[in-house]
Image (cartoon, rainbow, N blue to C red; front, side):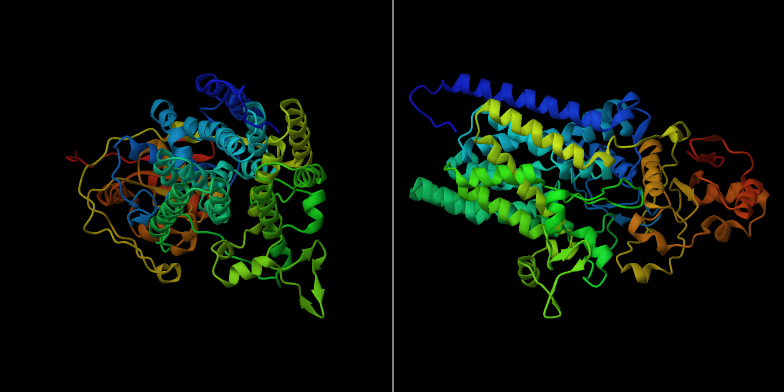
Length: 575
């Protein structure tokens, strides 16, 4: 561990050392992240990860790029999905969206998605490096290595394997306490505090909540260390600013009904096998479990490992600046990850015939938002932040060795999850933009703000002049729905598909039930009148439906990549 002395380098040289160390560490994280994705980078313009969330993320990042470029209206309500209804979309991943935007503008949504996937996790390096230098007085090299270790922890690898771009932004948990520390340090830092907090809240709200658990302890530690009234005042203002950001974000995310992204829900303990997917166990924290990559399952990585636990133990025994904060972060992460009830791989632990409650139960009782999803395993990012800060206190060569060993151990534990599978999005050539009918759409649109159950009796609303795409069949899986949303980013046509959370809100036989009564010779005119500019049939339709579609629409305009499309020309006289 180093301490400032009279031989400290001048500010310009110190800044240069920080930038060089962080730059090399971030570059190493980018290379490692790219290698974890295997064949994805062989064709970054035509391949996406074969995960549940890839297509939806691609559409969302493209919409963010359009908002930033002024090509879309700044509104959370959009007809881009569930057309002709409008849907409330509360975007997260805004920082990856900023990373992706230039690539979206230059190369399109597929490249933008892949660029954000590979580049944005490396933001953990400068954030953790700054935290380590401030809390632990680490050297620039050791601090940068700590950031790289954090960015490549098993939790990050698990998020990448799931295609969860937001959950791969581990820096979002570290930047919240950093905002408090910088706010107490200077007036400039105080001005930056709400911006740093907002970058976390609007990128990954769960990580922002976990980071907020450190706000009061960090503020108290900074005030005790400085023992100056002006510092205490700035710390109070920084905490208030972070709290204000949280209140604004709650309003932004508050419209749950009709939202595109609906959070997970907690699973009760009596559904043990499902509950086990949301929490860690004392054994799996040390040994891990058989993690597997499945398209129909979000894999939860709950591994810390004996090496990381040993590093924490040594760091807590040795004297050093910020040791108490490291201990607190480790304790919060490890204890909360166990969930509300103590369980093993064999079942709940019972004492006197009753399940053994854990501290997370108390947080749930007072309404801590993490209990709303029950995804307690995510708290392990706090434990890995503590591990990274413990490594940062070592000399650079020792820190490099520790980082290599721990990253290697994490790769071993998650070996079934990488390389992350990729799939060709060869259907892209069927979704070239079409000329639009700029007719007005608005008066006959409705906002479906009722609960999902109340929307089950959905009745098609015919638009007047709006251009849209009719996607079939009506009930896709999450992966298939994402591919359709990505097609919307490519051709710019709103899709008739409802959001993933509303699959059951419309009839599966939309085309057949709506247009089957129309004579084939009149179908084209009716589709034109309804504003349909393209019909897309994804995958294999049932034999009867396929025959009916063929009889009504004839040969497809384009086929390939598991999709057939029929382009509907504008009606005579339409602009």
